[in-house]
Structure formats: structure tokens, C-alpha cells
Length: 124
Image 1: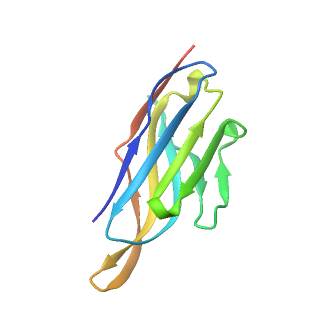
Image 2 (image 1 turned 45 degrees about the horizontal axis):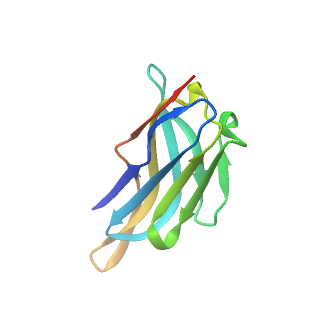
């Protein structure tokens, strides 16, 4: 079994900063792409940022220059540093990872895993 656990959400003021963290645990063979998504009330879940195992990053246009995604492979962790926060960043943020887990003595296929979500609220 694999689990993703997020932390670091909360309340921030306009222009403030928050840092989200997501730790993967369990029978992990390898972690491929990791990322963050968000879902605001009444809206569909959208991709915020991704980072590959080779540290290639991708961001949605609305967060470019304000958010930074990074990963610590030794700790199976992905981080999202969010600066210059805006009220429109308010959402539940979800960690997502494409993970290959052990199946007995051999690596199995890769699967998509999601965290439980962490609320980010930005006040104006």
C-alpha cells in the first residue's frame, strides 16, 4: 500500500506565503512524476504544478512566477512553495504521484495516488 499525506495548508493574507508538503510512504519502488492539483468551490480540479523524476517542472499559467514545486527524492517528498498569494488561489490542494510499488519481490506497475487534500484560504 502507498499513502500520500499532505501538510502545510492554512490561512494566508493577500501577498502572503504558504508552503505545502506531501510525503509518500509504503511499499514504494520508485516515484515518477509528482504534482499538485487544486479544486476551488464549484470548480473542477485543476493542475497546479508537476515535477518529473528528472526535475523537469510544469506550471499552470496563473501560478507561474509565484509558486515553486520541488522534490526531495531521499524523503519521498514533494513541496509547493506559494508566494504572492491571491484570493483566487483559495482551494483544496491535492498531492498526486505516479508511483511504482513493490509487488512481492518485484516492482509492479505504476499507479496514480492522491493525498487527502489540504485547505488553502487567502483573504483579501
